Length: 114
Image (tube, rainbow, N blue to C red; front, side, top):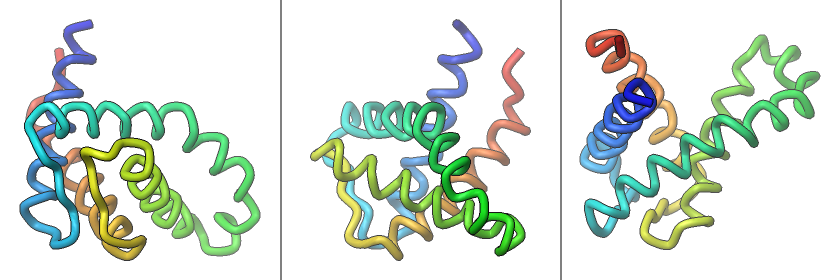
């Protein structure tokens, strides 16, 4: 349970950094930021594997690069599910998802949950 809470905090901080670095991403309040990171986490845990499986031929043809598009789609979907988290367009979501993944990866290495 403690590991899950640490990952959630790190992902929330990653999302906070993305909102500051990418124009077109807006989160209203701190609570909205926490809920948006939770929604992104759930989408990545449950919906992303299904979409990857369904788009496996495209992923294989692009040598895995199509997963970047899927990550952007998850980010864009989270913005449509939750009104407190706004993304201007898909290209903004694509860039934000790329930065979110990179920042989250680095933070998870630095603050490896015990």
